[in-house]
Image 1: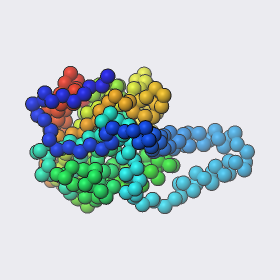
Image 2 (image 1 turned 90 degrees about the vertical axis):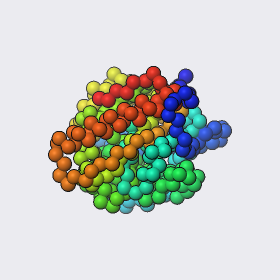
Image 3 (image 1 turned 30 degrees about the horizontal axis):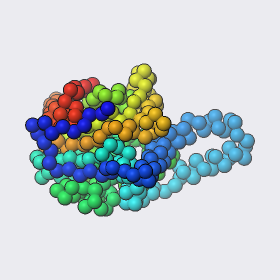
Image 4 (image 1 turned 45 degrees about the horizontal axis):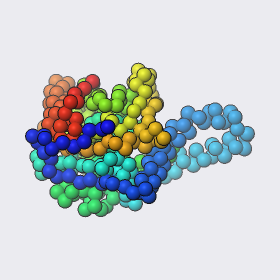
Length: 345
């Protein structure tokens, strides 16, 4: 069984908001359907449409191949979809799939810094980034913060998030990301655009590498060789909130045998092909015995350095890794993970 919350920690978080919670059969069925449509359609059908296209064209009659090509071309040429608060509300119903729902906690020291001009850095990614998606900008994009956020943490709907650039090249998935209204490619140009507008946004720092490194029951972060996000933030003197997703590493089992292959795929092609499962009868659904708690645990105010040197980036990278470790060690016992060790790779 997954760990449960313990109140024995010396540092108890106070401000929080849970969505989902206990779900009846109908709520669970709706949440499962949304999960399968969004993640199944986006993560599976989208990539398969690219991988399977050459084979499909070879096996189809000319007429069917032409129809398939027309459909794919239509998806590729569709104008960007507008953000949909209704879609965000529907998506957040997937929190009902988790034991006790999905909870966002904010440490007292972080509360004064909730607002514009903040980069929220989430760890770990997990197989599917539930913490990032359920406990972040999408809550504000519903345009109903009083329902989805604690009163002390009312975020403006003027928030965003960054995602792997390859996701925006995948049909179906690209359209779904646009409906959230808070997704920008994690490129230098994309992040600079957010910094220049002084927008608050979230980022899963470990990215696809952490999908490749995932082993259920272990807290593995891809961070030692990842400092580019800090270099950009230093150039704008941005404020960083360190966020940790407790329970993310336990939601799915996976085949770790393919870790070397997936790390190679990330390096060469920018994506992974994980083999994973949550519930035995429906692999796309997360395990039902795991609680998900995201903690906004610490704030780092970066100095504004127009052209930071490698030494300055390394200095702040070290401070950042130390902050991540502190947030994890400070709060792990409260959520039942007192015996876990953080692996920063």
